[in-house]
Image (tube, rainbow, N blue to C red; front, side, top):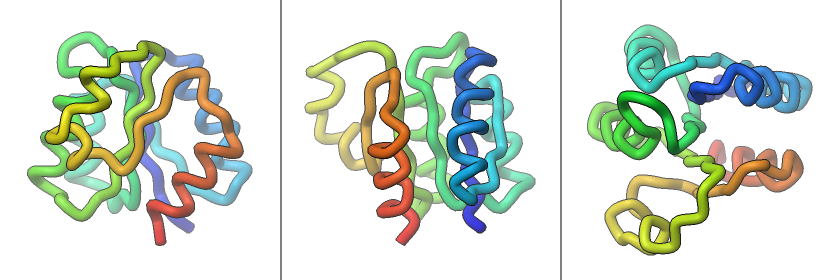
Length: 119
């Protein structure tokens, strides 16, 4: 069973993600901040990281940049409620991310992307 770390500062999104993907056979670990996510990464075997973009303190892109420096092989997915074409089209950002999705996410699409990333 693959372990997914989901990082989001909104409790409702953490719960929705867990409900949606635990039933799909994934072990879900939640963190309500990027800093907590980094702490979890140090102490837990994580197969894939999914993070919200806009969070207080360290945002999702800074979090994923940190994770990729420590664990370059970990696939990372960024989810955001904001459409930012310049951000999406940035070549350095594209190198960091396996995928970039907008909220609200589509469970079927996200499950497909997660399964592909874990192959």
